[in-house]
Length: 196
Image (cartoon, rainbow, N blue to C red):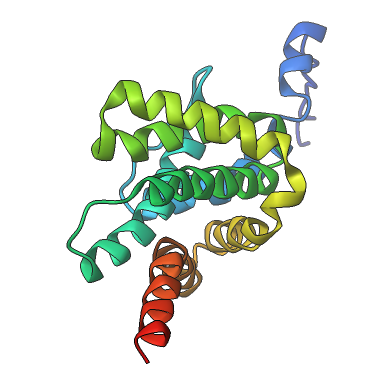
């Protein structure tokens, strides 16, 4: 005669159950961001209070930097003031897109501030970078109607991360590079037209 086996059901205490509640959903929402970072050997925080902010900042800096690198390959000059401002706005747009992707929309300002300051630091020093980052992030948040042209870039960045798609990332980089070049191209066209 076979022995009857016992099955035990463990019911966690309410405090522990509260920690587990929604943990899988939260983990699944953040998974594309972590896969994107790890597949590119970028820093990826696995835990901690600043996990979301750190990971979003790393992704934002990587995406905007890829466009900046494309621009720098074509140009030999330092960024002009309007380009520095554009770089900070691009960081805001990408951070807004990525925070929406992982359902952390309240984090976008912190991510934008950190990302823009990090991107600008190489161009202008830490103090000036922090000041310009704060100014542009404030303006970006205060004037939603003026940032419509940047929404597409944030959406492209989110798709690149969500799918971990190198082609979409390359397209996003090209659009970022073009935004850093556009007014220069318009000015050159105006000079050519004036010379005729």
